[in-house]
Image 1 (cartoon, helix red, strand yellow):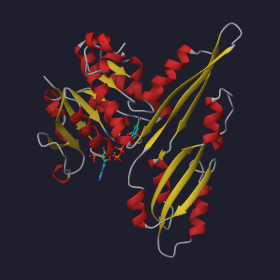
Image 2 (cartoon, protein in one colour; image 1 turned 180 degrees about the vertical axis):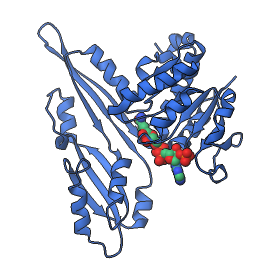
Image 3 (spheres, rainbow, N blue to C red; image 1 turned 30 degrees about the vertical axis):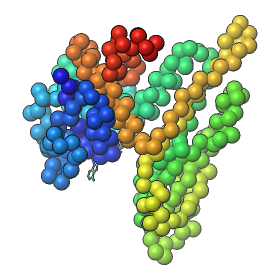
Image 4 (cartoon, rainbow, N blue to C red; image 1 turned 45 degrees about the vertical axis):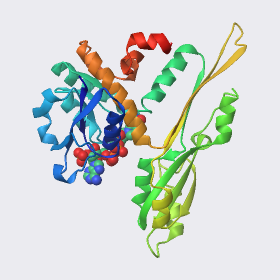
Length: 328
Ligand code: NDP
């Protein structure tokens, strides 16, 4: 029998999860729930239907895992604890500083309903977190580096769009190549924010807008740009549509450390991602963890979990026997 999946929230991630379900033969999409008018939300899966979010709890016995695809800022802190009482859930909550309080709220709800809840699943947090943990466990005295990009930051793009005179904007975060090389060479550099990443912004401005003012407002924006070297390009709406429609991202998690009695041997552990579509890759990680949530819930492992709590074999389409035979 397939794992019956529900999606709650149909934005970039919701669409990505729909595609990921298609790529996983042990899963089937049953329903998509939205806060909008369901008739206005068009999905691709012919065998599934769109419902209003208020109908979700009434369908709890028809869904094995509900995947929460709302935004981290305001949707998930409310939705994940709310639905973890009724469903096994997976979310991609990515406000790192608030993960402990989100965990506590979801854990209480999931335990109340005897459900399994996985939070903060994706690539960062998610696959990057796992790789940080493995490398830390193996090289306890080492040093961690995380670089992001080249990729689109939705938050920074939105911040530029709010500037007066800006019609559209896309912001790319780019790792500084020389900093990456120094880390890979085992030089253990101390890097400031400015030395690790640069920012590149493409802007479509209103006709007659003061471009010098817009550029200055971007470069001096507190928290978003003031600590970085930023390049601003003004382009046409046509160029934006042709060259900047995608949502690529990626990055590098590196740990350097040493072993031997006198620390005479140096090691560099690196995990890198180069993603054509951030939401589709994130959704593919989520699908694998939805399988784990399903299996762990059937074993009675309830409450809130993160990627740290899931043994790798739970993620795979293959059985532990198959994995031992050809993947060890
Ligand atoms: P979106 O803004 O595309 O979607 C968020 C929600 O907005 C949707 O669930 C949907 O809810 C609503 N929405 C979407 N489109 C429309 C529309 N046209 N009109 C009205 N409402 C709409 O966000 P993403 O899917 O790109 O990202 C969701 C979250 O995923 C991010 O906040 C981020 O925190 C997280 N993320 C985590 C990653 C990780 O590595 N852990 C990586 C990437 C993202 P509804 O259908 O109910 O209206």
